[in-house]
Image (cartoon, rainbow, N blue to C red; front, top):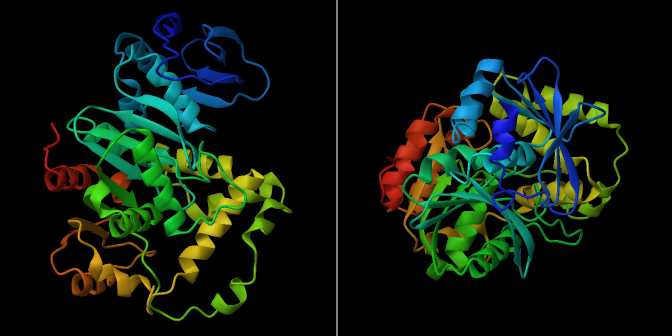
Length: 379
């Protein structure tokens, strides 16, 4: 069955570039097998050895179905029948490349702000999908799959995250990320696109709408990060701490992994496990740590009021917006909705019984609402 998958492998759908990568396949045969990907060469199999870059694990029946169903990989992952660990970009990219060209398409897009890693599906009106702090485009894969049925859905690793370029001296504030999104639109030759963002990605989407409204159709804001309204006691000190110190990693990898697992928890979901892997994959590099600390610092330090304050500027948003809130969200409490209603009385709101990541916790309701708001029902 693995031979049938490899026969369909298309490097134009997904390529590892000039590096060599090992994808370990577990469960398709009695012993694990490594698929070795190198440039545009045909993939080859070897006995499993050493540490693989990505691990794909499923039972034999699931692998048999994947061999017969070219487009079933992402669905098997979503349903928990297939687990992808260590590098979700590589693992899902491998599945996409064995799907005969159907479904997901991966590409690194050179822009004037650096190369940005993207995954997309579908045709029609473009929708850009932006992830939150510490996440990657992997957190938007369900949205790519759902919205790709009616739109050209494009998820991107923001600068500094995932597989996109990570400039050590990047500002990593909302304006910096917004410039990257406009540069991506230019590189893709898109005059306008809808923009959907979760958490920090929602704040970036708002910044694009505020600074380049002519490039935006509509905004979908999933538990967006918003400027703090309560006291920020650490702000005076934090302003003098350069995020470049994050390039130094005094803690060993095992300790960092343990802290992240304790902070996030493990609910058994393949998305949670893969999300932790994606965070660690960036965080355990010097440039990735700098980007994470700088972005987190800027979220905390953003001024709520004053001439350039977020809440001062927000009423000037002219782009139609849908806000999706989680009733159990502890990071962006539902109380923020009242402040948004006062600033944007024409905006739409949806409250779901979930936490901070509606597209993963309540995917059906979230994507149906987004598709309706953006103008095309999900089929």
